[in-house]
Image (cartoon, rainbow over all chains, first blue to last red; front, side):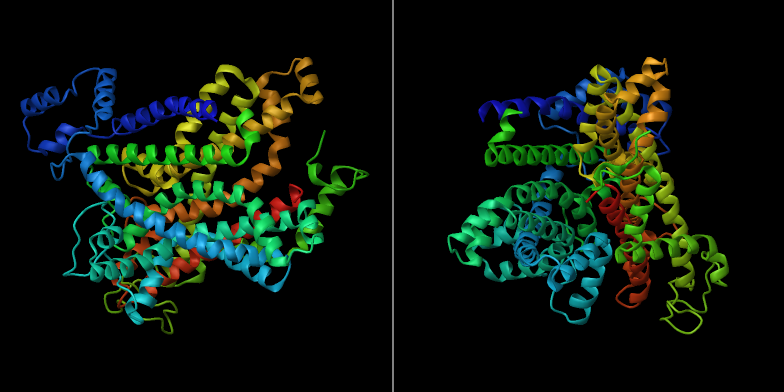
Amino acid sequence: MFQYTARRLLQLLPVIIGVSLLVFFAMHVLPGDVATLLLGDRATKQQLVDLRHQLGLDKPIWVQYWAFLTSALRGDFGVSLRTNHPALAMVLEAFPVTFQLSLAALVIALAAGLPLGVLAGVRPGGWLDNGLLGVSLIGVSMPIFWLGLMLILVFGAHLNWFPIGGVLDIGQSVHRITGMPVLDAALEGRWGAFDSAVRHLVLPAATLSTIPLALITRITRAEVVGALGQDYVRTARAKGLRERGVVVRHALRNGMIPVVTVVGLQFGLLLSGAVLTETIFSLPGLGRLMVDSILNRDYPVVQAGAIVVALVFVVINLLVDISYAYLDPRIRYQ
Amino acid sequence: MTTTAAGSADPAAAGAGSTRSRQLRRLLRKPNFIIGSVIVLAFLLVTILAPVLTPYDPTEGDFLSTQLPPVLGHPLGTDQYGRDLLTRVLYGSRTALLAILVADGIALVAGSALGLAAGFYGGAADSIIMRVVDVLLAFPYLLLALIIVAALGPSLFNAMVAIGVVYTPQYARLLRGKALSIRQQEYVQSARALGARDVRVMLRHVLPNSAVPILVTATLQAGTVIVETAGLSFLGLGAQPPTPDWGAILADGQSYFLTSWWIATFPGIAILLVVLGFNLVGDALRDTLEGG
């Protein structure tokens, strides 16, 4: 197990170097340079030359990359061209909002997707199975930015059940502990703020959960259908176990490995979906920060955000692989 | 010549022709395939017939009829500039088709070439190409697209290029696997023994034998590409006004949707329908042709 983990960690190194190269060079093929961006159009030639020299932009590209890499390893991505705050600090401040949103969406997707998948799988071809298949097909075809707007329209504007954007009601506040408003409110014991934070989370999390929900339902169904045809399930039935026990203890448990993989891989898709969801619900998360920074050509923040997300994504994929190897020993020896 | 009869159950299948026609009959019996095909065909027809189907211009406003709810003459209502929404949604199908051609096209051509080369040559070429693919896969899809758009600058074409690059690994992995397995087949060995050049072997032997999985992937990707391009436009990083693009119309609609719900609602339904159509066709093709 240790060997497997070590090998997988080692394989990450070239990927991470590749990521840093891609992020660095993507920002360097840009039309116009940072010095012009910083000083504006009215800067004199001398000012531009001076600033370029000061920023090291007149050095060879590989020297610049090396400087970028070594500073990045120290957590220094430079300062935002808009706010003058350190870029990494801005990214880390926004990240918990995205994390909370993704986690809530994943919880909804699992809480609904597992039972729905089992219900569909125990009677393949039945009306419930066919109905759920149809709904999940629509689910994966749904543009979530549209679904979000529709949810706001119906549950926010017309029924007035949930707020239509932001993370807290005006007048509510929490101290920053983890950066996740729901958790921070709970930790502080501010239940008014907690209630407000949860109500603000419902619509965005529901929006973001549609695609993982559809996928988890589908894969759970497939696993249950497959497992119910296995010998060990027939044995369990022959022993006289009740059907419920057969499905939950035997069929579902063995079907969990692929579900774990899908859930892990979904996390990356959730981070993608979060960009759109945060825009619709005006949440101050990482996705929103990235889009704003790109539109305002605030490259240090884009670079810091891209590297942080890629690292998180790669580490989550690694954890999925390791847990997979833990659940299924055959994988370790490949 | 071998065929794509990989999953066919009947070992006595007479040959390529009968396998194909049997698969086609199986396809045509699937209601999902029929529904999906009707949607996709309707979508393609609309892209061609848009100017015939509506008397209005997609970009010209009419300040006397702004934000009209759906009425006779404007069945889907009008937007904040008084443009007919039905017209904008119909013309938006052209942008969606362009996204499929450009983005899915880039992914298919670049991915197939990389995958073929990696699988066929193996060794250092394989290692380098697959490391590049690993790096592309180290980003969540939309984030990679954002980085590329940031580098190229926001525009509809750049958004399509970005989405194309993002989905290149899908095809690269597919074709690499195919090339690895087909490389060892006798007919490829004999073609090489006869002195066929590498490129010829890849294009004449490996590629045609991968046609079915490529078709399935391209169909399923077509839907994804439409959603993702619309997503970038929605964020302001793709189509710029006044281009009729479903994502951009949705973004417009977001500003007005508490008063004019129709502006954001209908382009979303258009995306949902077309993507559903491609997914239905793609799923049915995969189940039938790849032996599901």
